[in-house]
Amino acid sequence: MVTCDNDQLTRAITKVRDAYYHAQLHTDCIKWGAFYPEAWGWCMGMGAKYDRDPRVVADVVAALSPMKGWDENRRLAEKALKLVRGVKTIKGFNSRLRALPAMQSRCDAVARALDGQGVTGPKVTAFAANIKGDMSIVTVDRHMHALTGLSQVADASVAITAAAATVGRFPAEVQAITWGYHRHNKGYTTYE
Image 1 (cartoon, rainbow, N blue to C red):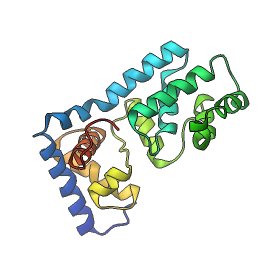
Image 2 (image 1 turned 90 degrees about the vertical axis):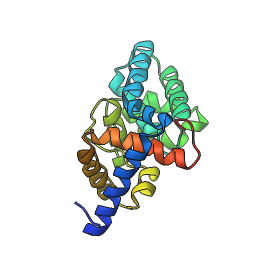
Image 3 (image 1 turned 30 degrees about the vertical axis):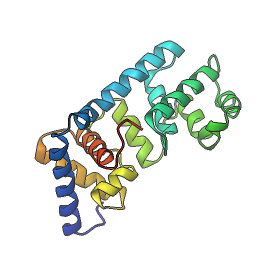
Image 4 (image 1 turned 135 degrees about the vertical axis):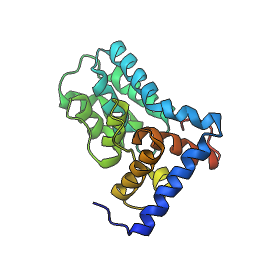
C-alpha cells in the first residue's frame, strides 16, 4: 500500500529511472546488475563446502546483512557455517554462534536461518529472495531510501518496480544497478 502522494511517487520513479540510465555510462555501475546471481553462486559454493542447502546459506547471509558490507557479510556467514558444522538444533546453533562477538546482535536471526525457518523483516526477506533468484522483489535499504527520497519501504519498492517496467528490466536488477550508481556517487567503489 502506497502512503506517499502521486507527485512524490512520480518524482521517485523519475529519480530511479534517471539513475538507471546514468549508471549505463559507468562500467563500474553496470556490474551491479550481476550482483544477485554472483551472490547466489557464492551461496551455492558455501553450501557445498559446509553441507548446507544454498537457500539456507542465502538466508544466513541476509540475516547478517543489516549495516554490513558484502565482504564482511560473507566472512561472518562462512564463520557461522564453520562454527555450526554438524549441529542440527536451534539451541545448538545459538550456543555456538554466541561465541562470536561479531554475531551477538544477529545470533537469533542467524540461528533461525540455519534451522530452516528463513528470515524476517522487509529488507532481509527481500535480500534473501533476490539472492535465491526472485528478481521481482525489491531490496530496499538506506541507500535506496536516499535515492528515491521515500521513507517507506513499500513506497520505495513501488517506485523502483515502476521504474524497472519503464526500462524493461527486472525490479531487482534495476535496484542493484541504481544502488551501485547511488553508492558510486557517494564515493564507494566496492560492494561494501
